[in-house]
Length: 135
Length: 477
Image 1: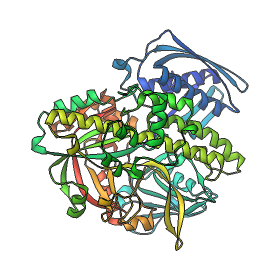
Image 2: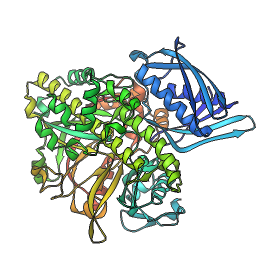
Image 3: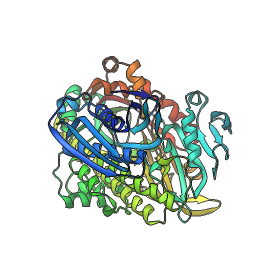
Image 4: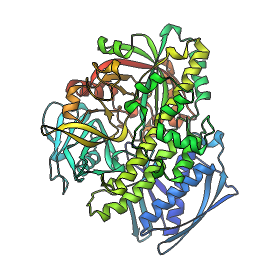
C-alpha cells in the first residue's frame, strides 16, 4: 500500500499514490481501515458497493463514507478491495474479517471524511490523492 | 497568510478584509505572544474563509485554542443573521455536540483508596474504543425519543436525577430537533453506540480540585479544595458523524443552487431560512440531543461505580454543568445597539453566558454559566465562569480546550506511549486505554499548555477562572 501521512495538527491527512483511479480508490479505503482498526487479516466476509456521483472527488467521498458505514454497522474490518470506475459509476467488492475487539479496538476512530483540501491529480506515473479524515 | 495579521492589543489580533477575496467582515482572534509562535497559516486561512459566508455578523472569531481544522478553524466562533445568514456543518464539525460535563462527589482525596481498581472498574463499565457497543438495547422508539428529549430521556428511564437537567446547557435538549431529518443510516449507527465513550481525544477522568481562584463562584458551583470530581468528554458518536456526512452532501448541492461562492467545500452551507438549512439544523439538534443523552448515561454508570466502591449516595454526586463545544444555536445577542436573534456557530468553542443570562439555572444566575475546559491527558483542567464581557465581545463564547500543537503522527514519532504512561504513573496518574499508541497521540506534550490558554481568556475577561483540577486517573478510548 502506498500512502504517507501529511502534517496536520488536529486530524489525519494522507497522500495516496496509485497507478490507476480504480486502485487509488481501493488503496485509500484500505488505508482508512488501517487507521481505524490497525492491521487486519484476510477474511471471507464480503460486501458490494455500487454508487454514482458527478465527479471523482464526490465518487471517492461517497465510496469511503459507505465503506466506513458498512464497516461500523456490520462490524467488519475490510482487508481487500477491488474497485471499477466507469464514467460516473463505481462498483466495489470488499472482503475482510469480523471485528475482533482484542485486535481491532485500539485504533483511531474516523468521524468524517472532509472536503477540505481534497485533491485528486493525474500525473505521469498515475494518480495522487490528498485527503483529510476528522479523527 | 500570517503576514496579513495585524496586532490590535496584548491578546487581540486582526485578519483584515481582503486577506481572502470576498471577506464580508474582518477576522479576529485572541492569542498571547508565546502561543502566537505556534499559530498555523492554515488556521488563519480558515478564519478568513469563514468571513466570506453570507450574513456573518461583526467578525469571524477564534478563541486562544485556535488551530487548523477543516471548514472553520478549531476554536472558531461566528454568528449569522437569521434572515440573511447561513448555517454550515463546517462550523459544527462531524462530532455534533462533542462536549464536556463535570460531576462533583462528596469524596476528598484521602477517601480515594483503591484508585487502580476504580479506574479498572470504570474502564470495564463504560464501553470505550473503536467498535464498542453500549449497555442498552434501544428500540426504534427509544432512539426517536432520545433524539427529541435529549438528556431527559435517560433521566426519565431512571439514569439520572431531575436536577441533572437544570445543569446542562439548553437543559440537555434542543427543541428544534427533527428526528425525521436524521437518516436511517445515522440511526442505524446510533442505535448500538448509545452510552459509549468513543475513541481519540474522548475520555473519562478522575480529578481532584487543587486550587480555587474565585471562592464565591466555587461555592455556587459546589466545588471546594481537595474534592474528587469526574470529567466526561464525548459526543454524538456515529449518529452525529453520519448526520454531518449526509447533510454536507445535501448542502453542497444547496450551495450551488443558492449561488454561494465558497473558498472551501467543507464550508458548504444554505440559508438558515431554506429547506436544506432547516433540515440540517433539525438533524444537528437531534444529534446534539443524542450526545446529551450519551453523556448522561455515562455519568449514570460513573455514579453507580462510585456508589458501589465508596458507599456514597447516588444523590450526593452532583452534575456541576454540561457544555457543548461543537454546535450551532439560535441565541439573542446585542449587535449595533439592538438585540438580535442570530445563529451562533461554535466549532471547538464553549458558550460562556454571563450573570443574568437566559438558560442559566437559578443557583448560577448571579455567578454566570460554568465553563469547563478539559486539559490534555495529564495536565490540569479548569472550571471558569461566563462573563458579561463575553456577551459583549464574543457572542457569549470562550475557548474549549488546550488545542493541539503536535500532529498525531508527530506525537507518535516523538513520544512513546509506554514512556508517557510510565511518566504519568510516576506523577500518580493512572491511564487505561486499549493501546499505547492512543496514549502517545493524546500525550500532554502534543497540546498547547492549557494554563496559558485559560490565562488569556481570563485576562481578556471572556470567562474568569474559578478552579483548577488535577488528573488522578483517566480512561480513554
